Length: 423
Ligand code: CMC
Image (cartoon, rainbow, N blue to C red; front, top):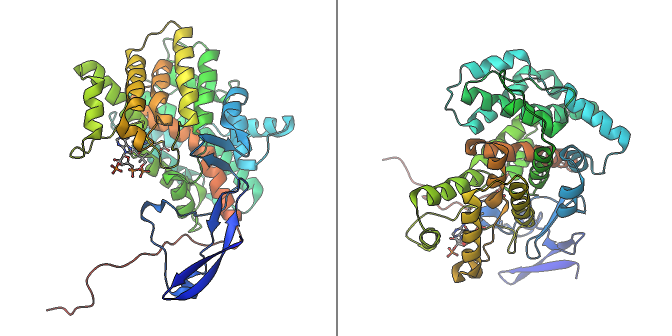
């Protein structure tokens, strides 16, 4: 079958049926209004494909996630975050030369314009790092305005992409230093991407950071797992905002704002605070589960459930294993990991969660690893944003390259007052 029929008031209309690489099917209704005068209504875009994309594939029923065709487990095991970023944005694994040019771009664009560092001075030390991140990433368009005038030029795009991937890491580390009242540690040209970040976070004038390769490996893994996830809330935001032809800085800044919410990337901070509450206040895991099931209570079990995965999120599986091996490798005992494991075990046996196919998602175990790396909970969503940056850039670029180019502009069904006159 290559078409689908819709019958309205006994009239039959035909629409093309599109089949994706993995045989997933969609009805192309772009001519629906012109043909029938109707639009579709889909609250929360549960069934709406906003684009055709060649970047990331998810099979939510089977728990499959692939970037550019490569399985996430293999990528997280064998690639670095920088190689993954290249793969997402440019569509192929980098050759040795491409990798060295890309890494050089990242290194050369890691320093913030010195005047930007003064912005941090005026920010209160208790400001949420995500608020700082949004403000600072948008400020890049103040300091580097020349570069988006010509963003159809591939060299200019390459520069802006490298600047965003590299500078978000510097901004994140500076915001942490600001929050603890320590001087900024500048990026170093001799360190790799993740090690450079750890050094900017944890070096201080009194104690230099001792390069820790296991921590670097874990951070690479975490960032790779967050690097893209097709048309989620923040990525759709980047595409929609970018479709007005605004520059890439502004588009990803909108994505960062969307990511902040607790139903999306903000869930990782919520998870750890929930586990800490259970630990500190002595709540039982059973009480928390009962609260999440109570329809009169708006509380949700953060780190569980997903719009697309109706099976175990493969990222959660990788992170669960990484938590156990990283913590046991350093003889660390985090009581929050024990609580998380107990919570998961009970949830997966509970009828409420089974019926609704609610499994741990990426945010459930990531916080335990970030804690083990010494990163505070308020920074967790910032870490998600650092990881997601290449995905946002790749999706923005793909959207721009799609022909015919169209501004994103959903419709609505108006249900307000009919026409009336002023009294
Ligand atoms: N705890 C308790 N009940 C839940 C949960 C949860 N975490 N998630 C979904 N449900 C229930 C929900 O109440 C509803 O029940 P009913 O059918 O009786 O009304 C049913 O499951 C379906 O939920 P939904 O809200 O319609 O599902 P959705 O696809 O719109 O929402 C979600 C997906 C991720 C927003 C939701 O599962 C949730 O709020 N989870 C907690 C927040 C979280 O962990 N977010 C991170 C998502 S993964 C990282 C990312 O991509 O951002």
